[in-house]
Length: 431
Image (cartoon, rainbow, N blue to C red; front, side, top):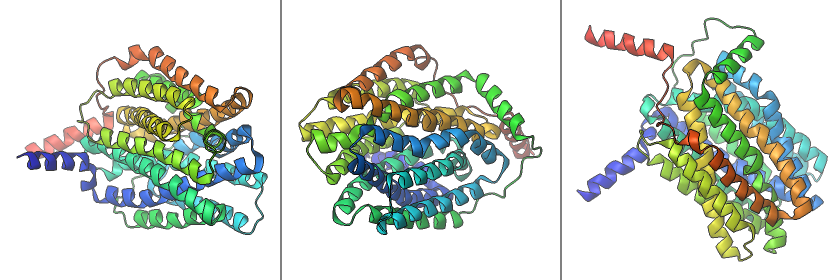
């Protein structure tokens, strides 16, 4: 009986895998995300070893993510106007080319800080179109709406498992073969996700019946956001955390090299321990019942995030610091994933691309600005005091949003079109 209950719980945890297209997506993205984290770790380490400047670390993050903020609204419109599957396929091919160019420059010893920053800008532009297409496409891969939160949680577990494996592999590769090999391996991992996309069997694409001009669609998206406070307040929370707290990882190379007296492998280990906590958080979210009050968990996760950032900030004992880093990853992952889940579940089908573009703005727009801010502050007061301040800010943000997060439980929103489709199906069943 106990073994049967465990089997049922395990099946519930991975219920989104019952969908063939989602299994393909998860498999391809798992490989690709490992490569992405290898490249991200490699770029940060190369920049820091070339400049020894926390500010330049912040500028690198800014260069790779701020373009996503600038182009996220057009990316959201493109996701709602055109075939998201084809948009995603094109962005994956473009990302592979970007990684290949970075690898060629590095392997041929023609790389420079300026060259790396320019290629980072290119990747940021690609991501501005990738994110608004990728997240809503999951809706089309999952046939049962009740499985959507589980699919999003598993998606986060995949990203964070890559965060665990990628930096650790990157640290080893950086020490033995150099950054160029990291970037080349990332380029090769895109083959897996492209193949998985080509093997999918999605419903035929039905173009929107009426296409307004881009400005009208942008205005429509803004009005929708203004009239849906459950989404707009969640985005405000995500934006503040992304600006003031999430950029703590900008100064992690300083901890690896200065605080812990380590090398590239040490930097990889720090990121990997954060990944361990993030994976644990993803598994935790995947096991939740569909009717769980996500806002309460969001509040508690923000508190956990802040507390363990404070504990990590001045810990010079490496093993104990890694325990705090893992707990930080747990709180961080839950916080961001639940914000995105609330936005996705509450948004109407016809508005998801544009809503996800606002998510990209809140994340990719605020995070690079925050990275510049953290890099500049760290240059003045040091990395440990900077992260200490970020942990305190996380607790303040949790307190400010307490009233919103203690409101009634989240109920999935159903658009007018989806209500009509449901009614038609009920009529057909009676006939």
